Amino acid sequence: MIQVHHRPGEDGGIPLPELVLKLGEKTGVRLVIDEDDGYSNIWASVEDPAAFWKDLVQVMRREWPHVVEDLRRRWMVVCEGEHGWDDYKTLERPPAAPGRLFRGSH
Image 1 (cartoon, rainbow, N blue to C red):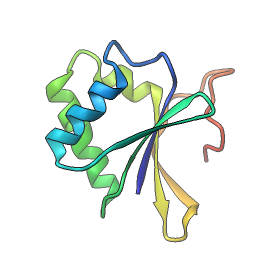
Image 2 (image 1 turned 180 degrees about the vertical axis):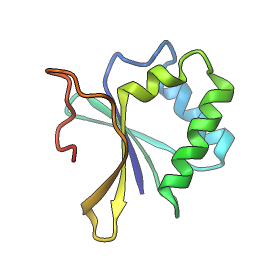
Image 3 (image 1 turned 90 degrees about the vertical axis):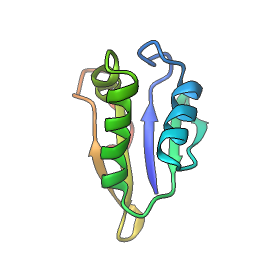
Image 4 (image 1 turned 90 degrees about the horizontal axis):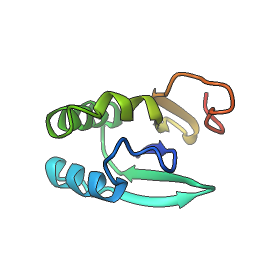
């Protein structure tokens, strides 16, 4: 399972539902969006979350080359570890900025 935390209002000019729909179409993986405490979360159940994230980044670079790096600086990407979410792994996180940290990030 992979989860992408997205800060509201920081979509880089691409509406999040459109982005998720296109990423799902391009990868053939069902992506789900939910809202949690003001954050949007994108979920996908995949065998190899790190490889899947790399594939998503490549799709974003092809489809939206003008915003992909900006989006990556705004997102935190985590996946389940060997013990589920108890030991989750961070695949990518935005640079730390005062007052802009994600809750629970390792």
